Image 1 (cartoon, rainbow, N blue to C red):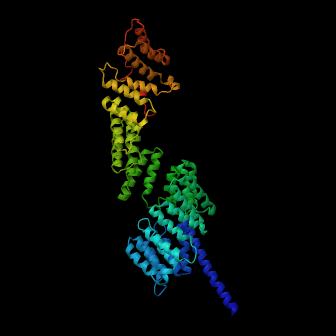
Image 2 (image 1 turned 90 degrees about the vertical axis):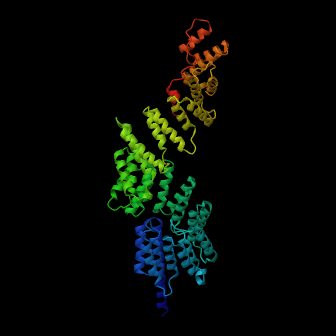
Image 3 (image 1 turned 135 degrees about the vertical axis):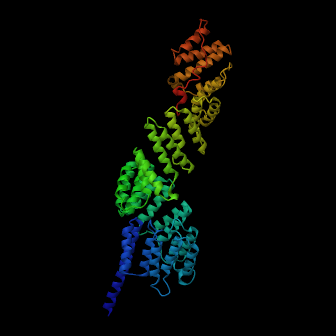
Length: 566
C-alpha cells in the first residue's frame, strides 16, 4: 500500500510539474513574441488537462497578442469555460472575465467582478489572485487604470507568501502607462533581483524604457543582458535594431531586424512586424521583398504606406505615388496622416525637378504639401523644401513665398531661416524688408558670423540710393572686424567692397585723406589688381582720376550675397 501511495504521489507531482513547465514554456514564447507557438502550447494544455488554471492561461494568451482587441470574445468564451469548472465559479477565471470587460471599456463592470473576488474572504489574502487583478488594469493600451493596478499590487506585496517577480513587472507596466520612468525602472530592478524565470523579458523591458529616455549606454547594456539570458528572445533584437538606428548604423540595424524575424514565428504578422522594423532601419529592398512575400495573407493597409515611402526613397516616384494613393483610399480615416500626403507632394516635386515642363507636377506637389501642412504634419520642413526647389530654379519670387511660409509655421525659426529669407528679399529688391530681416540674423548669430553685416550694408545702400553720408559704413566696419586675419585673403572680393566704401567716406565726407589711404592700402593688400582702388589712390595722390562710385558692388546678386548657409 505504501508503495502504491508513493507511486501515485510521484505521478501527481510529475503531472503538476509538467503542467508548470508547459505554462512556463508558453509564457516564454509569448514574451518572445512567438505568438503561434505560445498559442499551440496553451491550447494543447487545455486539450490534455482542462483545468481552471490552463483555461485562464489560454484566455490571457488571447488578450496578450497583437490581435487582443479582436480576441476579446474568444477570451471571454475560454474564461467562461474555466469558470464553469467550479460550482461557485472560479476566482481566477472571474478575474479573466474582468480583463475582458476592461478590454471592452467597461471598467466599472470589471471592478465589480474584481472586488467580488478579492474584497472579502480568502481572496482578500490571496496575493496571486490580487496580482492577477492588478495585471487586468494594465493589459491594454486603449483601456486601463494604472493607479488601481499599483494600489492592488502593493496590496499583493503586503499579503504575499512567496516572492513573485511578476508582481513588480505588473507594477512596472502600470508606471509605464503613467510615464513615470524612475518608479518603473525601480520596479524592474526589483523583478530582476528576484531571479525571474524569463530574465530576457525583464531586460528587454528595461531596454525599451532606456531607449525611450535616450539613455543609450544603459539600453545597450540591457540588450546585451537580454541576449545573453536568451539568444532566441526576439524583442531583444528589435531593440538592438532600434538602438543601432539612433547611431545611423543602418546596415547593422537591418541585420538585427533580420535576427528579430528569425527568432519570431515567421507567420504573416511576424513578417509584417519585421517589415516595419526593416523600414525604420532604412532596409528598403528587404521591406519591399517582404511586403511582396506576404501580400496573399496580409490584410493590413499599412503595407501600402511602407511600400510607397520605400519606393520614394529609392527614387521610384511614380510607383511611390501610386502606393500612397492606394493607402489613402483603403486605410481608415484615423490612420491617414499628413505624412502620407507629404510624401506624395515630395514625389511630385522630385518629378518636377526632372521635367522640361514641370508646371503640372509643381501644382500637384504644392496641393499635396499644403494638405500635409493642414493636417499638422511636422515630419519634414515642407515649405523649406519648396523654397529650396524654387531657389534652384532661380524662381526667387516663389522661393520667397515658401521660405516666408516656412518661418511663419515654425515655433522657433533660427538665424539660418532668417538669412535665407533676407537673401531672397534682397534678390527680389524688397530692400526695406531685407533690412529688418538681416537685423534678426545679426541678433541670432551674436557677432559669430560676419556675412549678415555685409548684407545689411548692401541693403542700406539700396534703400538710400541718394544718400551722401555713407550710411552703411558702420555695417562694413563691423563686417571687417569679424573676419579673422587668416581668412581675409579668401574673402578678398567682399573685403575690397568694404574697404572701397570706407575709403570713399573718409575721402569724400570726412576729408581724411590719410585714413582713406589706409583703407585703400588694405584693399590693395588683398586685391592688388583692383582698378577702382588704384584709381581712388591716384585721385587721393592728385593724379587725374576718373572717379567711379565708391559704394562697391552694393546692388549685385553675387554668390557671396546669397549663399545659403554659414
